[in-house]
Length: 125
Image 1: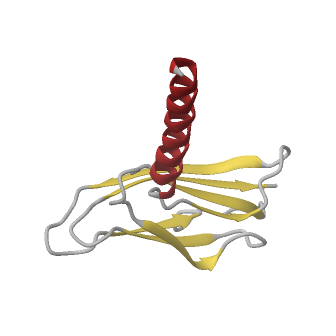
Image 2: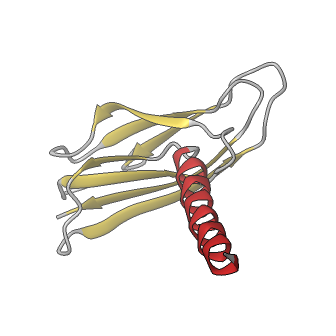
Image 3: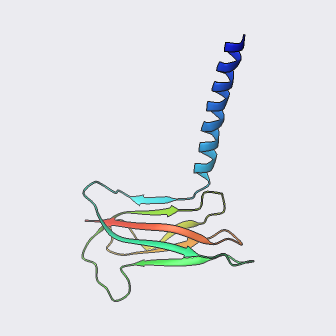
């Protein structure tokens, strides 16, 4: 009987580990647009950190290319990684451009009362 209880505990422990992994990975709200192939080149990377602002949302706008700088490449894919995994992270939205264009404007917005920690990667050919 002792062997049976040990197997049951191992199965329960494994199941709880899987559930915990699913819960923690679903708290980060990351986004991917377009296609990022092995031949795509990283055109731009930006790490964003904005502290929380009590009683407000925190907004940040990412523009590529920066004003006054040209870009002769076409964007094929974009990743916006929410670095906050405890359920208090923000989200990203493309406002203009993006995959198929040579420019993009992305808006990052926090949850109410929280800040932003994102890594934005823009790929192209």
